[in-house]
Length: 279
Image (tube, helix red, strand yellow):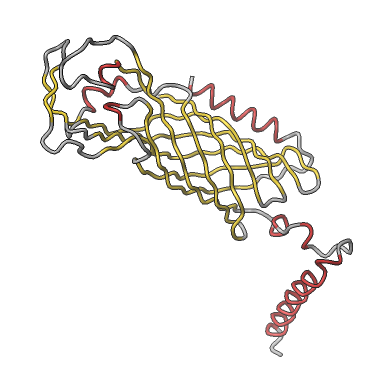
């Protein structure tokens, strides 16, 4: 399934890119800081306390362009860290007896889940003046490795088979140019497929041992916020100068600033040529 999905992404990307008259492919590199949580994780762990990194490369191309607005298609390959984290909630711990198995667990509230994914997002961006972009997309993720402990006890060996290796996500993204080829972005993602399925009793155990047990099943989902820096490799500097700041003869309001900038460049060029000639 993973192989066919990746092949399908590649075919869609190439086909759409070929619809543009001037095929411009720009390389990108990403680095980001993640804050994540897992919905319906054990013992009601709430909040985006798990931090991680996001890093990777991508390619982006316009598929439609008019004046200062364009629609761009992006394909990325990322290393992405997700999961959930909670420290000790109960200093001395509390004993919980499983009503089904009779096993006793010392409840401390500690929860540590780290999930490392290889991820392939496909994004479509709406680009205004090549300064601000907003996009939506989907991604496929493959679980590379993980660590998992509850109440200070390593559970990875016992629980690893419960976790799904494959994940599909929905994404939303906004980014703004902050300096030349550098952009600052904010991305949100939520998994469309469950990370794993647990019993309701695991999510909300009856510490006192009173009440009835439940056979209800709960799906766990990854939720992620990312602050990202993007560097575009082969972008033409003229492409990220807003049109109104170019000297075109149409907009006198901006002529002085544009002319001064061009004269400054010309002066530097003349100085370099003079140095080469030894003048």
